[in-house]
Image 1 (cartoon, rainbow, N blue to C red):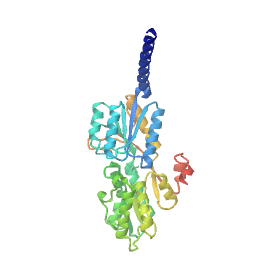
Image 2 (cartoon, helix red, strand yellow):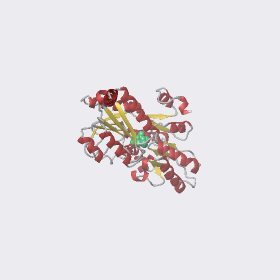
Image 3 (cartoon, helix red, strand yellow):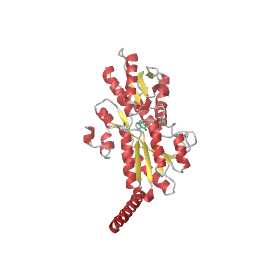
Image 4 (cartoon, rainbow, N blue to C red):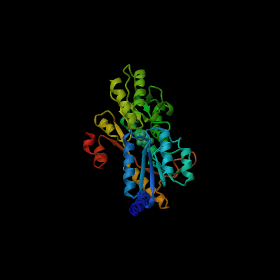
Length: 358
Ligand code: BGC
């Protein structure tokens, strides 16, 4: 009897001890001063977001925080419920790269009610007053570089022309897409107006040239239709202004089986491995290098500042109005990349190894 009582006492003590360790363990696990950071990324389908997520997790953990990193398979409802879980599971700050900038207002209201600051990562979250800061690359400049590359390669200032061009931009729900497109068109539009550049398909408005979900398949299908409708008679295509690498990839695929003329200039953005390989194989002309390590470290600085009650670093307080007011932003510098400088930019900087590009 005595023995039974003793083992009961021991078992109960162990149970409590276990519970106690579990509780203290979980608060101990939740990082610096018990702080957990929720990081919501749009999709694993595109190389860059995997890098962004990895960089954020690595750098936040190195700074002593626990990280809840989630990818939403490019599905808006999934992203909303992942963010809801982050809010309910005790995240102190949210870092969000939105799938659709317009779709997070309701869930972010919950964050606001719980005083959880929100950093919009790379893509601005629209029509919500819950967005504390925005960190991105200078998106207008990305588009401007693409437009200028086409202008310079075709020597639009001096050559007689006319030259034929087609335009391919990104997802209408991504605020960045409008900045990229505007940056490029501010350079190209005067030449279209003067007739030196001709958009043979006639598709020039943002809505006509947008690509849902930035999907390569969609860009490929649209370019195939454009080629068969406008270039099948041997008309030469001189340039395709693509806002990023996933769309440039689709365009290169369309050209491979539907076009035999002189290969056009194709722009891109992100320096995805598949696209750098295409650049080396002369199937894409340039890309924009956005060092996601820089963006991640800037966002980590923002998180730290917020959690320490300090002002976060920003360098732009006028460009990004999300419909509820200007969101203080930090804009990182994008860089132009092509066959001539990719080694220095991508390999010497340790972003890729030579093997990855072989
Ligand atoms: C990013 C680009 C990316 C695109 C597609 C944009 O918001 O800024 O770097 O190529 O989304 O994922």
